[in-house]
Length: 267
Image 1: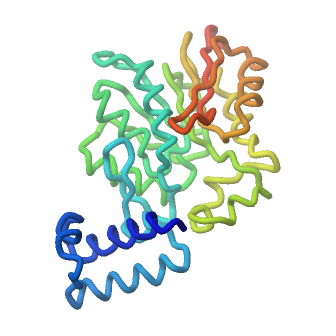
Image 2 (image 1 turned 135 degrees about the vertical axis):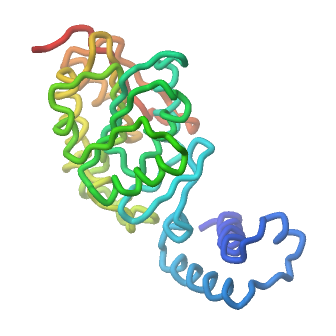
């Protein structure tokens, strides 16, 4: 870990354990936590040295300017996923009441952010994990967004027969044998939220194949994927019959989200 990152993490853990601001710590470098804070800080530091993610230690992670509760039951929200939200907001004008489906909602960071910024939207958030849905519901309650319908089940199964103007998904897209799974934070995250078959495309294939049955005419499908999967995902979308297929880069310049529109309704 780079020295600057380590210093920042120590500061974050210390301020949270001591219930003070970072500015206070910087103004008082000699500060030591009180006895209770010291016990909390020592426990966190020991667990962090073993690799446990800071987000799980603190119980939250910032996403799109909001703090979201997280636990080992959910994937830790990543900054690159904010692109998925931005692209969704572009396609859902304020003042409209579109229907939105968030597949594999996890912590609910995508659904809750969209609900806050598009209060008229009708949003359904799906996850196969009841533990993840419990976290998502807590986050929705925290931000007072009561217009999210949470459904338990695998991908589109809980919304059989329903169609949406917009479907967004950040599915598992890492190959089962990818060494990145065994490095850093992913070691502690739910494997089912990360890995998807030998090439990482299994869940993306399933979503693209079934999406036409759940999109309104001219509805849009937005998919986050891995840094080297854009060509494959665009090919999947085109073969399925999507139009206006494109890929957008995240702030790091990495092809991160691919999308397509569905123009006709299937029976």
